[in-house]
Amino acid sequence: MRFSRLVLLSIVVGVAAACESDKVTTPSTPPHSDMRFISAVSDTGAVDIRFIDQIDLSPFANTLGFRQGTAYQPVEAKSRRLRVFPTSLNIAITQQVLLDTTITIPDGQRFTLMLTGPSRTAGQLKFVMISDDTQAPASGQIGIRMVNASTAPVNGYLVNAVGDALPGSASFANVASYAATAYTTRATGAAALRFTDVGSATVNASVAGPASPANVVGELPAAGLQSAGTVFSVYYFPKARAGSVSAPGAVWFVDRNPCDGPCTSN
Image 1 (cartoon, rainbow, N blue to C red):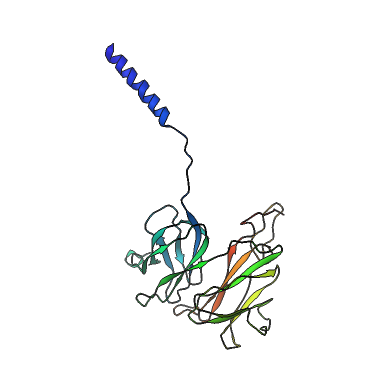
Image 2 (tube, helix red, strand yellow):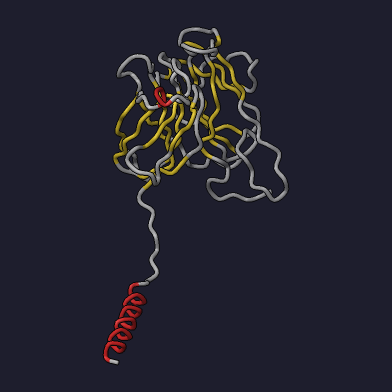
């Protein structure tokens, strides 16, 4: 009988202790930012990018090709270690490390890690951190800037269509290698960028911006030239040193969706 009472007492005490420790907790998110990867490596195929210090809040890229980018992903803000690997189904190839580096991630920002440099020259591959704007432009406006992902300075001309004559002066003048300009605002509507070498009137590349897709009633507006509040970075890339990309080109990337802040559905 005494043994039964001791067992019962132990169960009661255990249950009471468990109830006492079962308190509701509010999970907290560590300091973090939003980031994306963009590849400006013109002498190799696709790459895979991985943070190797932890699993949570660690963006990644799979099969990221030249002139391609990922969506924004949350990343923990602190000193982070990441590696770049060649994309391959052959384990002997894909386990090769093209870059092993540590980057300090800022808190509360939106930014791009642009992979640059020739991969076939030891020590030249690197990431360039580019801050991206999350501020909404003025009502009825979109934001546009230029990023030079090539190794020489470039001029950018903002026009209405790719066939337009170049204006008398560059909208983005003498943009240095791997540099980003300030954003300029513009009314919603058609827009294109044309690019020349500094001191030349020969157009190296022209690219029109993306039109906004038609919205179903009740949907929030998607990013595009006709969607006020959209902010773009137009990346100018050199021609590839390997593969079939034989001429310079440019890509419009969305830095800010119209509904990243207060937004009203149609």
